[in-house]
Image (cartoon, rainbow, N blue to C red; front, side, top):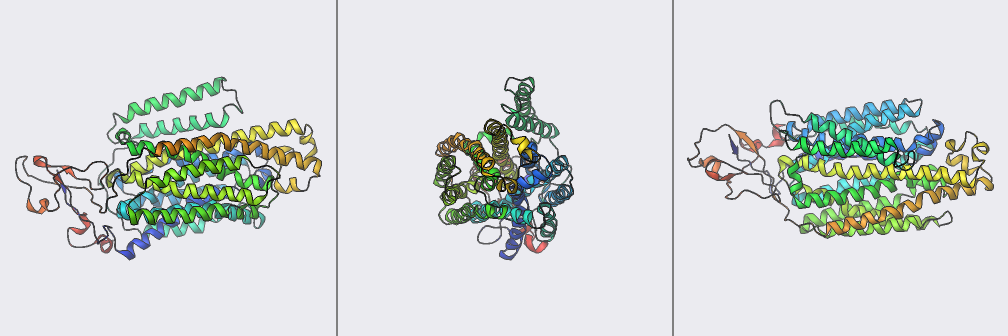
Amino acid sequence: MTTAPTTPGGSSGTLLDRRALALLFAGLILSMLLASLNQTILATALPTLVGELQGAHLMVWVITVYILASTVMMPVYGKLGDLIGRKPLLVGAIVLFMIGSVVSALTIDMTGLIVGRTIQGLGGGGLIILSQAIIADVVPPRERGKYMGIMGGVFAFSSVAGPLLGGWLTEGPGWRWAFWMNIPLGLAALAAALFLMPLPQRRRGRPHLDFGGMALIAVGTTCLVLLGTWGGSHYAWNSPLILGLIAGTLVSAALFVFVEGRTREPIIPLRLFADRNFNLTTVAGLFIGIGMFGVLGYMPTYLQMVAGQDATASGLLMVPMMGSMLLVSTASGWYVSRTGRYKWLPIAGAVLLAAALVGLSTLTAQTAIWVACAYLAVLGVGLGASMQILVLVVQNSFPVTQVGTATASNNFFRQIGGTLGSAVVGSVFSARLLGLLTERLPGADAAVDGGVNALTPDVVKHLDDGLRIPIVEAYNDALTPIYLVIAPLAVLAAILLCFIEEKPLATRIEREVQVESTVPAEAPVPAELAEGTQTSAPGPHRSASARPVAGGAAVSAPDPSAVDGTSLASRR
């Protein structure tokens, strides 16, 4: 077996012509929008939702289970995409997501909602990872920055459009429409995936699946999230349950390393950790994820309960964050594509994230709304300058045949941070809130219809000042100090990112295809294979993925879709 040559098509190094690439990218945007909206759309609906379903004590799980399920599935989608192709997986993820939406919309209690959100997350993890990896299949790193910047803009748009839409639906037809709206959007994304995505073929034959690695990731991640959710709030840190979760996390991690070092197709190959950029961006991304999801998950609730805004207004108040993140993410992507420079952007972004968290920690019940909006705008600038650039750094460090696995692994750890951020912030917030309410209003359960678990923004707004003011101040004092505690993590992320190696961004895509060959080891490389030969195998920073062949030469060549004279786009 030898590595047959491939050529990218088009002068820009992309594998599709401009029209085909535009259609494919539009389909990817739809898929990412579907997933990213549902990370934030319940933020403004959450107070009303949990009040109606009598489940304030389970509020943290509505957000956490979605992030947890999507996190566990990210490495699975990434590895399978590299093995069998990304298109069928994307179709399956969209269908699974829509099923979860239907279950959530029809629920009659918190248990049904949590089940539906779990199913949504199982599909949502694939929508994000596969979209990012598909762009890497057809666009070289040097050109990819502008596309990744726009994808970052989708997250920015969703960070505000989600809460705003959730608030409007909550006050209008009802919070259940936050799930029903996923059906037409999902059908549009499904049609785009089926008809607008001509993608390179992957290996044929039965893939070797790492079931052991998948199971250990699920167990270890679940133990870690439960530890962050329950530790110190629901259960003492020295309780048997918490100690068991600590043991489960450590044992699962150790067994995972053991299994991944011995399986044929590991879900997270240990060789990824030999790359310095991968390690630095992964840890930094985890820290950034904690801060990002800690704010996104609970800031709209804060604005409703403390600032007295309705659900729609609390969504509008997130616009400064969305606008700054959208502009900076798009501008930074174009900057990277034009200059090839990128190292300083995520460093500056992490510093601004830390500054925004410190600012948010100073908010009080009497603070003017515009001050909170200003801090959110700074947060948006920080996220816009860092999130998608970190993904690009990782993708530029590995060949295209490993880019799905590398992207998914990096996002997996960032989502771990997001899951922990959401779980820990939500758990500590809930525990502090109940403690403060009990301390400051001993008779609150009797004074409020349904008890403190049934508090909604509308209920709080119509209470007399003797009850309303202590409740509002309790909400503020329960949440804002948490942001000061997690701000140092953003500082650590900035320090780590200073050590990134700014590798040149590749300008072409070359991929491997295996063809039968009877060339003996001592024979010269045939002329049809020698065209495009490289005399040195690429390092981890190159997108060209040549491998040694007979005689030690490294051969790389054009995409198989161009070998017979037809383009990939025309053949699909």
